[in-house]
Length: 249
Length: 249
DNA sequence: AAATCATTGTGTAAAAATAACACTTTACAA
DNA sequence: TTGTAAAGTGTTATTTTTACACAATGATTT
Image 1 (spheres, rainbow over the protein chains, first blue to last red):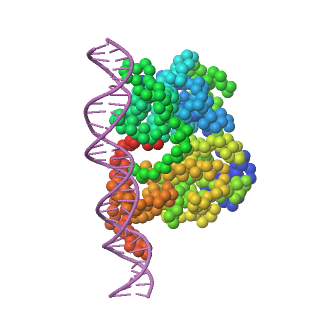
Image 2: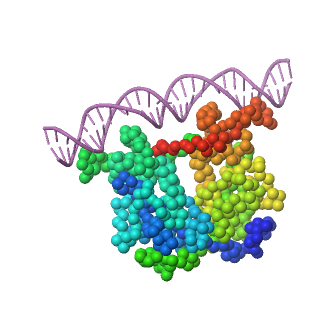
Image 3: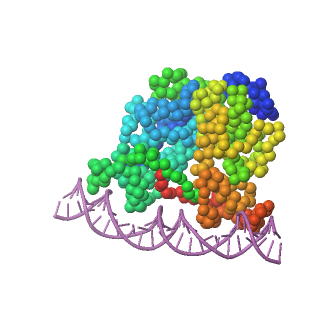
C-alpha cells in the first residue's frame, strides 16, 4: 500500500501501477473475526434498563455480557445485529442504530475480535423473557458492575450516545408503549438524562413541537386522576425536515 | 450461540454450559478483512476540501478514492488511521475521529471488506503534497463525483457528521492556522454549513463563549484593514465541562 | 496628501425561547 | 364524604437570538 510497508506484496498499491486482480488484493489482507454487540435499552419502573446475559466464557463466569454474536460471512452488520435482537427478544421492528466499533487487540481473551456496538431501544412490555433463557435479565443501568470483556466501556459509550441522541431525535418513544402519558414521557427523559425537569415547561415544549396526537384515551389502573394518552406522530415528523443551526460548545 | 443457529458448533454458547477455551471459540468465527478509510478535510480559498487519491484498482481506473489501508494484525483501528494519515500527509497530531463502519458485502469488488471510516481535519497549509504522490489532490467537497467503491457514501456520512459536530464541538480550529481572524473562522463555518451568517452575531457568539485568546497580532498581507488574530483556548475549554440539556427535534 | 476602497469593529431594539413558579381539577380509595 | 395523589393549566422575568447600519482603519490609488 505504501513504499516502505513491510507487509507489502505484489498486489499492494504502487504509484503508477494499477491492480487488476482485486480479489487477489483482498486476499492479501489480514482477516479479523467480527462480532456485533447490542446494548438493548428498556424502560421499566421509571428506570432505564439494559438487557444482559451471563457470560458463557468460563473466565467471565460471574460477569454479565451484552448480547452479541459473530457476523456471518457476507452478512451486513446491521443484519447481524437485528438477528441477535430477534433471537434474544423475539422482537422484530426494533429500533437499532450503529454506535461505534471497538478494536482493542486484547479486548477478547480468545484473541483479537473486533466488535461493532449497536444501540437498541424497545418497549420492555412487548418483550417476554424466554423461560429457557433464564440467564437473560434486565438490569438497572445505574447498578451495573462486573461486565465481561470491555462491555462496560461499550455500554458507557452507548449510554452517552443515547443521552445526547434523545435530545435531538424522537427515539425515546421506542421505549414506551404506543400510547403514553406525558408523565411517562417526562419520567423517561428524567431517567435517561438523570435530571429533574419542570413539569409545565416539559409539557409546553412537547405540545409546541406539535407531534403528539391526542388519542382521546386516558390512563387506566392508576390510583389517582388518569392522564391523557398520546401517540407520537412519526409520519408528520419525518416530513418535517428540521434545519439545524446553532453553534454551541 | 443460540439453539437454532445453523452454524452452531462445539464452542458455541449454550444455556448452562461454559466455554473454557476462548481461543478455540474465537477461531471458530468467520474472519473478515478490515480497512480504515480517512475522510481528510482541509480548508482553502474559503472552500472545504477533501484529500483524495486516484484509485489503484484497474476497474476504478478514473475514480477517486479515500486514503485507506488494511488494519494490521493486532493494530488498533485508530492507530491504523493515524498511520495512513502520517504516511500520506507526513503530519502527526492530526485531529481524527471514528465515524462509522461500512459492511456491505459487495462494497469492494475483491470480496467482502469491512471498512471503518474516520474523519480527519488538518490545516492544509501545514501539509506539503509529496511530489512522488502526484495522484494525491485536494478536491472541493462540492465538486466531487466519480468516487471508487462506496466512497461517496462514506464521504457523505463524514460530511454530515462534520456539519453536526462542528456546531457542538470546537473542531473547526483544526482546519485553520493556529492564529486566525474572526473572518476566517466565519468563512469556515459558512463553508461547512453552507449557510450565510450575520457577522456581528457571529462575533458576539464567539466572544461570549470566551474561549478566544486575543493574540494582540493582526492579519498581514490583506489589502485592507487587517483583523485581529485569535487563538482558541483549548485548555480552558477542556476544563469547562458544559452541561448539555435541551430537548429539540 | 487626498481620496477611494474593502473590510474591521461595534450596539441596540425587537422577538423568541427558556426558566421559574402555585393553584384548581379530577378520579380513585378509604 | 373526605382525603389523596397526580393532572392540568398561565404568567412573568430572564435569557437568547435575530435583525440591522454606520464609523474607524489601513492599504491602494490618484
